[in-house]
Length: 477
Image 1: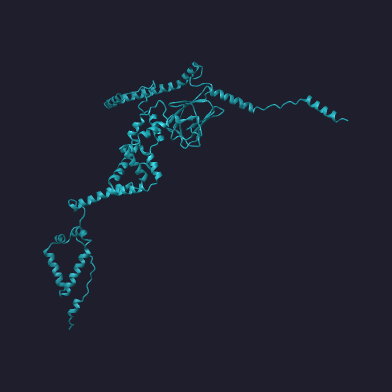
Image 2: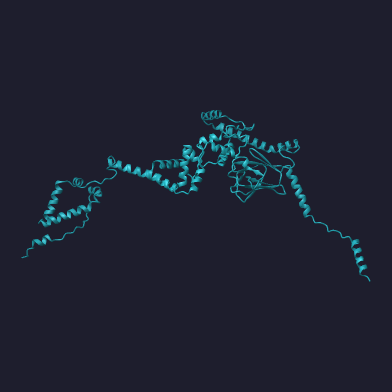
């Protein structure tokens, strides 16, 4: 007979807690995906219940029979739906209050990111210039056009930054703290470049343009209206802004210059009527298009013929006027024809720039308008002996000749009717074509004379013989 096993050995039997792998059925594939995070918790509960049952005297047969009985009473799919809690995914809470809270959090997070998006690009000087510009003009578009920031900002970026400074407490605190840490000299520099308000320009319009105003007039204007002008305004800045207004024909006592007689100006109403007529045009016709193209080709051919005839007509006009145009004389090599003045080049070298107490230039651009961006000695125009003109750039900023930039330290040859642009000033360089050939002929004659071999000078033999005889007579005893 086999010895009977004691009851204590049954209660002390060890059981494995490890999950056994088994094949999943079709109805379990979808449902078990949601149960995977909570699987260890269920295994732990099953293992604890199993150990309790074994300790109480139940064997494996009773445990398995109980499980089979439960599986018969409750279907598998239904039991899984009842026992397992569903995860709170966005699809499950899309119609509930939880999804609304998630949307609000995402929206606030995106707004916070937008407010801090350009925090690295915006310098404290940019914030200070933006605040001063809005205080002066009350218009963000004007601030965006007239204020020079540290880097390029679009109008939308300027609007976002202004709204962040107003309504975002974190951004405004950081910006204010950064502006407080700026050096007083930097703050004064930003304030000196503040935009002019409409009231300030209204007071500047009262200064007449016909007698050229002096610096004392603007100083008196600044002293009489200190509450209207910005605290950092000086008489020099007021004079410079007034020159800008005069340059762009913005003063009320200035008369608009008439257009040339050959330019047929069209009014705005006529142009609008023409645009409306074009919009209401008939549909395209291929035959008409081909005829228009042929007519356009003939017109271009006529224009080319006329352009070639211009030189002939100019020669005829010069012969009728004895070959000397009215603007030139015998002492003028060239003319700098500007918008307001004409400068005659009577020497072989002239300088262009701004005159000061210590240095004078031939062409003073400060008397023509706002010349703040022009150097003291901006350029030099020289005429060589062969009649060629050269312009050398000597200022800080480049000069444009026929749209081509001439960097400092470089030079370019000037032709007749060359357009010279210095800052906001434009000149047409006109050469005296009748005087230049004479200069070239004289230089060629002089060069030929210098290169021509010179004949040796003849020695006077009689004088030489006479001196020899005298020397012999003196030496004789």
